[in-house]
Structure formats: structure tokens, C-alpha cells
Image (tube, rainbow, N blue to C red):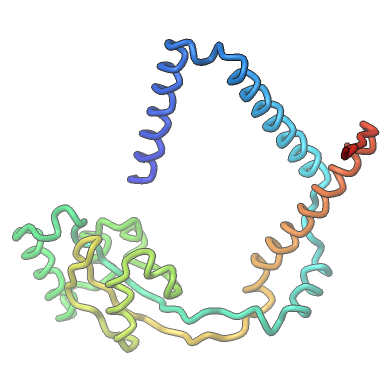
Length: 228
């Protein structure tokens, strides 16, 4: 949400500044007009390049994926990860409000006593999008969990499977998390690596196609660059 608001604000600022520049007549300068024409030409050239590349781009074959997997098997590894349930009771803005803290403590006590199942508590009380699935965050690497909340990562790393963090306050609000399972780093299976392999081969294919398209375009135009 904050990123969307920032992008909208930047867009609005850009539109406002462009309108003001036009009102000052800045768009009538020959130098600026030439710069704008060059930017448009460059953008059109990039779109044409992308169009030609996309028209030739095909998904990698199963054989190509298998070959890439075998060639890079030793480097394709799953990082350490945690499988979690989590409840976000409050966001950062109201994490210190006495009523919010007291309500969260009551829920935590009921969960820990076994009176209220964790998944049900998440559906009833969590602000996080995972509430609709009972607080299931699934497998999260350290990087993924840290990007969600660094303090949550630090707390989870101290847990054994089945343990929970209790109520904790972090920079993103009030949380409770339960560690279901953890795994050490290990080799990927072919199925686990498929997405990575597909993207790797796709990028490689795009680079080759872009080079081919540029060479073809130069040839069609019979373009020669002479250096004095």
C-alpha cells in the first residue's frame, strides 16, 4: 500500500511539473524538443526490439531444462527455511495502544492453553493477508522472513518446531508466530529447480535474440559506422 501511494505521488508530481513546464514555454526550446524526439526514438526502438524478440521467444524444452539442471546441479540448492503460522494482531501505528495489547495478550493466552486453535485465532484476529488461510505463511527463507519483519526472523530462529514466540512487538506491529518445521540448506530436486532453470534459460535466450535482432536490423539498413 505504501509503495502504491509513493508511486501515485511521484506520478502526480511528474504530471504537475510537466504541466508547469509547458505553461512556462519550456517545451518550445529547440534543444529540448530534439532531446524529447531522441527519447521517443529510443523508446520506439526498444519497443520494436522487444516485439521482435517476443515473437521469436519460445519456452525452453524439457530436454533443455534437464540439461541445464545436470550442468548446474551442485549449485542449485535450497536455502535454510522455516514453515510458519503467524498472527499479526496490530500494525505499527497501534501496536502500543493498551487496548490492542491487552486484546492480543488474551488471544495468545487462549492459544497457548489450547482453548483456541492457532489457525482459528489467525482467521479471527490477524490483520495479515494470511488470515484467510489460518495464518499459514508456508516456507520462508531467512531473507523472505527478514523482509517481512527482521525481529520476527530473529525470534523464529530461536524456536524449536512446535514452539511459538508468544506476543512480540516489532517494527511492523504485534505478532505471534509458531514454528511448524525447519530445514537446513540442501540440494534442489529438478521440480524445485524448474522455475529457476526456466527463468535462467529464458534470460539467456532473450540476450541471444536481442543480439540477433540488432545484427539483422543493421544488415537490413546496410548501416555502416565510420570513425574519423
